[in-house]
Image (cartoon, rainbow, N blue to C red):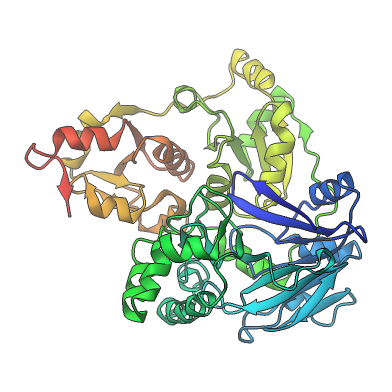
Length: 480
């Protein structure tokens, strides 16, 4: 049996290429939308992809299942869950597909896949127990668990409510997840666990960075599983407590993976913009993503209305949380990193990538007197200038869990990845000042607020260090 975990480091997402070396056939489990890289990985091993499968309707990226179906590959998808959580795009289609229910078995070459329904993260969620029949095994070697069991954590059961807007869903989902965990504990300890995500994913709150585990290890050391073993009520409270706010785009991913993502085909190929076109672009409804990593440079001079969206592990979250899918996009980016950014964007459904502004073109624009905007910035030691001003609004854009531990008195909390959807809560007549844990999230939030027309100041600095130094000073830090 051939096995490879294929990683998207930005989304901390894992897909699994599993092949039968005797027959040369292979399957990909939980592929992202740009399927060419899986096809290439299989070909490099002398395998041909004959099947693709999802564990569930994903919330954090667009699935590649439809792209594979369009390419003539057989696809497997869940037929569990209620009527609201089915793969609608497969209905009445001419694709080669098979809908799966608990207990179903299918084979790729001599590799057997047994379907396990494990609802809770989503109603339709499946896991796959994998047995190498060609190698003489009569018991599974591992389980592709998707967003059910992670290393050190479980898939969060709140997303139907917190991301997809299904009111009242999270507590019943948590109770359902509890039963799924009890069923999971019936498995043998030696079975390997192949999760759908690792540390950095927003699909859980305490995911480990180790890429694989075993049932036995998770039984002993997974805090969420241990809570489940102590009883349903304790589990429900523990699993729902402290879950981070989901990025804005999660609701859209749920919708599109259910109804069917737009077919991608080839990757978008944006054109290179000339310096004399930049002013018209910034005056339009298009969005410019400034991918420079140095936020100090961005604050010192950036295109009016552009968003600070550094091309690092935050790129997908910032772009997906601040940009609507209907907007045309332009990127300030080096050509050597363009394909990386394009793949990141199409994986979250931002396909309208019209053009790029290279650093050289940006410099030419500046040297020719092109308009730039500077962002006022101060250190945390100046925060009282805003917290004591009735005409100012202090905004804390950290996750609510961090805000509840400690925050500056008078600060309002809107997590940065929810700022766009909660923009109507902001008073347009007051000046804004924004801080976060390290300054990174605040920098992107400030750029969005500027684009929305607010008078805004960036507060830079390391909040944990500053709060530790000021927690004894009366009124400077509020703890809960």
